[in-house]
Amino acid sequence: MERLIKAWFNSVRAFRRLLATERAFQQELMLLAASIPAAVFLSSSWRGYALLVGSILLLLMVEVLNTGIEAACDAVSREFNIDIQLAKDCGSLAVLISCILVLGVWGTAVYETLAGTAF
Image 1 (tube, rainbow, N blue to C red):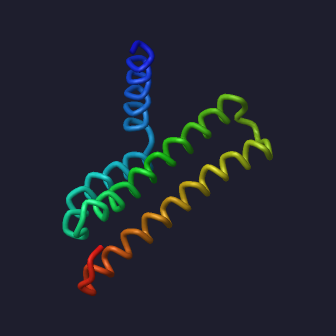
Image 2: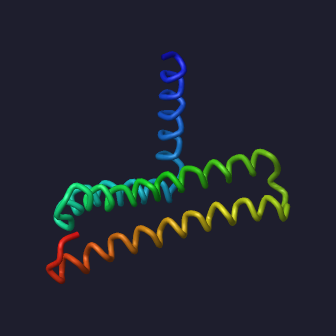
């Protein structure tokens, strides 16, 4: 139980730091806040709702991991290194792929809502 409590406090510390310093995390958190009520209107089932909100949560998770990669790389060296550049670029690519996924899921939901089919 002690391990879970420590993990909780570590997570809260990371959340607070990201909320205070990372603009992308702040924007994605606002997107999550907006998506929770919007998903109610776009989905006709709990599965559809979970998919819509879950895609935003996945984006947030990838952003958190990307920030962790960048922080670890910066802790190793701030000088240019091709391997560090690749690590940071891969983290950025993961965020981009997550954004594309969100756009696909939400785009499909909007299209199906406008077309009158269930999502």
